[in-house]
Image 1 (cartoon, rainbow, N blue to C red):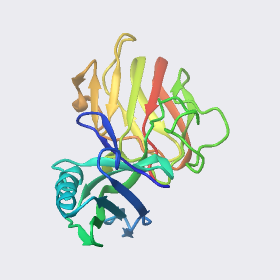
Image 2 (cartoon, rainbow, N blue to C red):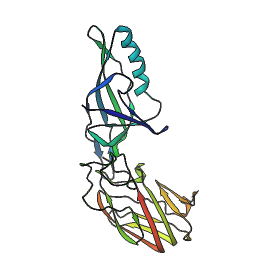
Image 3 (cartoon, rainbow, N blue to C red):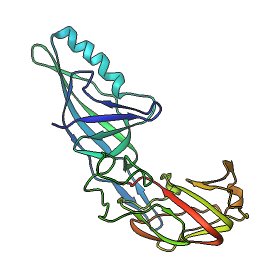
Image 4 (spheres, rainbow, N blue to C red):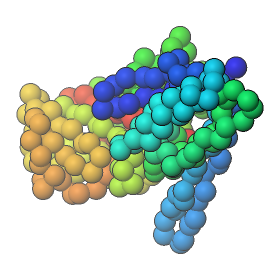
Length: 261
C-alpha cells in the first residue's frame, strides 16, 4: 500500500492523507523534469504530479460530507509539501488544481484525481546537509545519490570539498536554498573551483563576527550587508565541488542546503 503525506510549513505539521478522512491513494505519477535551454541558460517548465484517490461513504449523505472535507484539505492558499511512502525522503512544494469528485456505485463511494503543480519544478530532500546523514530516519534513503562515505558540511580548513548528491546544480540566483555560514578574521573570498563561482566580502571581519550568505543576500551578525559584497553567489555542481576560502585566517564554514531532484 502506498500513502501520501502533506507537510504544512506555516504550522510545521505533517498530515497523513487518509488518517482522518476515509481516503485511499490508488497510485501517483511523478513525471520527469521538463527543461528548455538556450545558449545561456536552462529553465524548468511546469511539472505536474498526478494522484488518484477513492473514498467510501456509508450512504449518499456521507458521500457529500466526505467531499466537503476533501476540498479544503488539498486546495489551500499557500504552497505546501507532499511526499509518498514509496519515496519518503523526497518532497515537492506544490499547489493543487481545482478538482471534483465523481460518485460511483449505489452507496457513498467516490473517486477523484489530483494535479499538483510543483513550485520551481524540483523535488527536494526532506533533510538538509546539516541534518544527521543517517538512513535510520526517513530524511534520507537509498536512491538519492548519497555515496557510501562520511560526508562533511562543516569545515575548519581553507581548502575542502562539498558534495551535492542531487540531480541539479544548486544556484541561489534561481532561488535554490543555500546557507553558507562563515567565521574568520579578515576579508574572505569564497571560490568554487568546480563551477568558477566567486564570492567576495569587502569588509574586514573579526573572529567574533558571523557572516551568513543566505540565497542572494549577505548578513553580518544578522544585519543585511550585501552592499559590502561583490553581489555574486556560490553555485554547487552535481557531485564534488572544490572550495577555497582565502583573504582571511582561521575560517570556520558550514554549507547547508537540500538536494534537488
